[in-house]
Structure formats: structure tokens, C-alpha cells
Image (tube, rainbow, N blue to C red):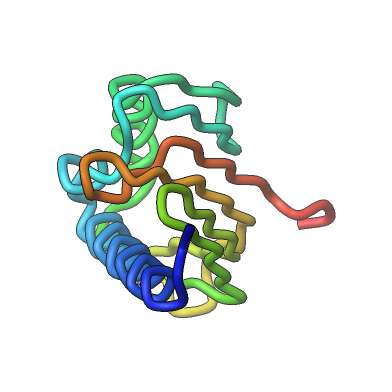
Length: 136
């Protein structure tokens, strides 16, 4: 059973993971991004295909998506909440990725939910769901 101390430690580990993921996205470092996902990750995303299964398929998705951007990226979060136990954790947040050259208010906010599992002592994303709020 999760104790207050283990919950706090696990939440801090997931926050560090999220920061690492954001840094990798901002740098367009696909190898670093993929380290955050399990081999059998299931992803529901906005651009087609609507479902990806497996890290290799999701890698191709990222490679294609990054072609839309010329320069470095900004990654922002708001309303972030983490719920965590000893072996499973969840993140839900609003996220915006935009080109630095386009300014801080460019890009669209999307809803993101990530399911994490603690595998061999490390938190890893096993499920991710990204959606666009209705009406933009």
C-alpha cells in the first residue's frame, strides 16, 4: 500500500519524467522522447492514424509530426494533475507545443492523459491519449 512518502516520491519522479519529455520535445530529440514509452504503448492522438500501438509505430508518428516545424519548440503545460500509487500513475494536463519563432501564444492547447506503470523501478508511459477540445 502506498504511503504518503512513497506517493510524494513517485509524484516527484513523474514530474521529472514530464520535464525530461518536454525538454526532448522542445529539442525534437526523438530518441530521448521514445525512452519515455513502453515497447507496447497504446496511443490515441489527434493526427491520423487515430491509434498507434507500439513504440516503433509511435516513433514514425513523431518523425512525421516534427516535419511541420522549422525551428526549436516551446512546450507548455497548465492545469497539470498527477495521481500516483506504488505501481501505476496518471497525468492529465493541457499541453501546447509551438515554434519558438512564432511567439508564445501560437499553437493550440490539447488535452493529454498519460498512464504510467513502474517497471523495474522506472516510470514509463504505457498509454497516452491526446485530444482537441470541441470548438477549438
